[in-house]
Length: 390
Image 1 (cartoon, rainbow, N blue to C red):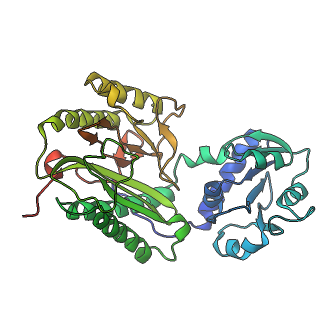
Image 2 (cartoon, one colour):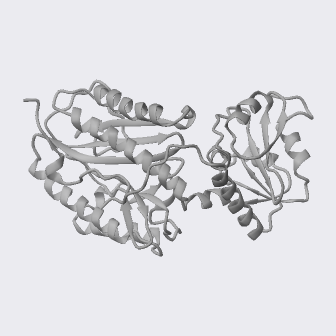
Image 3 (spheres, rainbow, N blue to C red):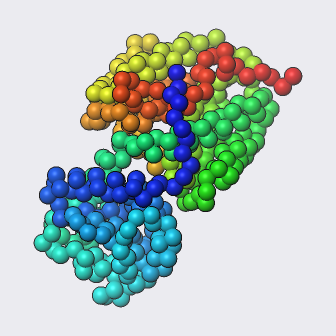
């Protein structure tokens, strides 16, 4: 059963962001770092509430072991940053790119960070930026690791995003009928979701707000990363897979359902049942102390046992937070041990070319003794056979 969590639409309170910064500094101390430099836009947003598109003008959040963090930014963006940043930071600017020698972002960083300091940087930095970083460098994804376990505030924000995703799913399933075009689903589904966000969240940041609501019809549902045509019309049967994702002012969720129109082909019943069994096994195995890789291993083994080993295309799940795809990965190669307040998807899938794809997805919270879905839409076959137009 879904857990009752109060959705949150408010911006993060200053105390929330200060706790995050304190956790980063604790992790820095454990690694004996004098400084940590964030350039990943998601991590800067996580720590400050500031979202931006850097283009050729990089931003850096320089976090010393003690004292005020410093935002290194182009002059163009400082007023924008000051309006959005919700923690105490100093600003250090550089000239418009490409800047003359002495006034570049590299010069700004070197003034802030002496060459003999132990400096942590992110693995996502480009090679060019890594070469520009001052100090004695160590690649450590401290912020990425801390983001995996969510605070009560973050869970409330993700719960809100989950409720918005369900609005998109309801719209899609209400409209999906033989003869209806994809454009109708996409337009009305995204309108339903973004309309809620714009009305319910005070001053939402559109740089971290985006929605997708679309149906992969039976001809494409076995290709989950294909792109449906906007003017393609749906036909009877299935399987069809509706995919709904939302980033609602900085926090994300998804919900997906496999459904049929008017009738269920006989050939679809066995893979449907196998998918549902794999899904139930994933829910049963996700709990604190379990390796994420172990969950994926047993789920994929079950799918293979049913004879669909050649029809597996992806892992059992992935994490949610600021983005819709982030650690922890519920995948064979993951080294993560699940903890309470992690949020992941449960979406084992079976894909048969010529027949279609079979996948539900839910946004799922790891609890103290198991897990619960934050998206609560029915996954039963009888509830996912849609009527015709008559």
